[in-house]
Image (cartoon, rainbow, N blue to C red; front, side, top):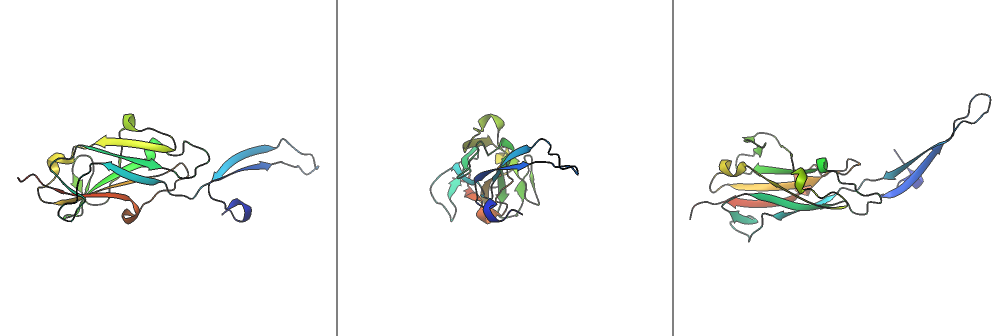
Amino acid sequence: ALTGPYAVDKASYSLTATPINSANITGTPVTRLFVFDRTVPLTGITSPSGSACAGASACLNSLGQIAGTAVDPGNVSPPSLPYSGMKIRLKDNVSGQYWNGAAFQAGAVDLLTDPGAFSGGTNVTWSTTTLAGAALKDGEDYTLYAHAADKAGNDQLVETGMSQFSFVYDTTP
């Protein structure tokens, strides 16, 4: 673990090691640059959206595109958010199951966003579509979660800390 002067979050450091053999002859120094990073990226869900309804963020009669943003605040060496780090979850709040891309199942499942709709860098936009629409049940509550991992592996793994959008799926007029 780094302590002392190397504990400043989002700071860039260089470390140089110079080998010395038993005859006290120095070898070629090797320098490595690194960033000490322990800040979790921030995410947001921008689509779907709607007015509050039935105790949820919105009532929806379809679920097409899911889109949002992510940022790695204060990062000194962008781009720090890789495509593989942006993840979403769709949870059926009634059964507690998660969408795996083909069906609902027990246990949390993280889905990646569409690579073509991912703008890498420090401030990221992302989107994806889902085939979950046919599996959604009329009148049930669902929650979309979004979270991102940066190159240092910082990620929000607890759902209560993830970006959330809850909705009631309502196809009954």
